[in-house]
Length: 184
Ligand SMILES: C[S@@+](CC[C@H](N)C(=O)[O-])C[C@H]1O[C@@H](n2cnc3c(N)ncnc32)[C@H](O)[C@@H]1O
Image 1 (cartoon, rainbow, N blue to C red):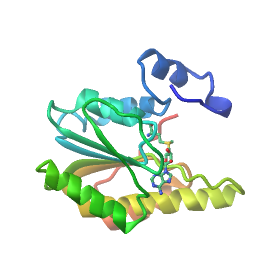
Image 2 (image 1 turned 180 degrees about the vertical axis):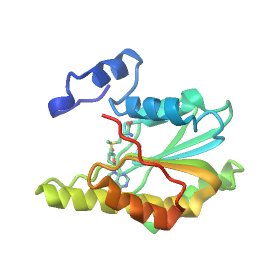
Image 3 (image 1 turned 90 degrees about the vertical axis):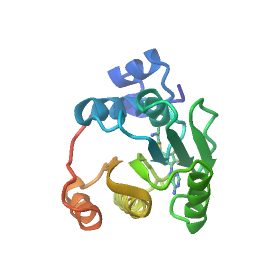
């Protein structure tokens, strides 16, 4: 597992992820969400936005039907993972959409059943700046999801700041069937 900074360093999710051989502590968030909402077992095509080092991709590969497409995208390289494809791209850029379309075509996929997003912009600086950048990235991810999601598909995102406010915007873009759920 990669380096974990600050207060998360030795918490139970760090240890659980390590025990299961997951690449990130964040993997446990997806395990919790999928155990509650059960969206992975029926997803034949999964797009994981901001996916490095690949912990959510590992959970997805374990739980989707055999032969499904799991595609992870990040600004930084994701080490190869059996059963998944990864690309180095900025999810906010049009070139990223072009690449995704190409991979969909190559794999005979018309739309994704599930789009995941766990992005954290590397901005640093003031708390307010971090909150704004994080939420801007969520909106970029939702917009990308609207382009690639199948009808009735699922979109799962991390929202670290002002979840109610961002939820309203997600409702506008994706419809009001979405739910807000908190994990530690
Ligand atoms: C918390 S990590 C994701 C952890 C991942 N879900 C896992 O379980 O391994 C956040 C990621 O967001 C990525 N990121 C931030 N901005 C991005 C962007 N514009 N395009 C693609 N990836 C981005 C970062 O490079 C970082 O790897």
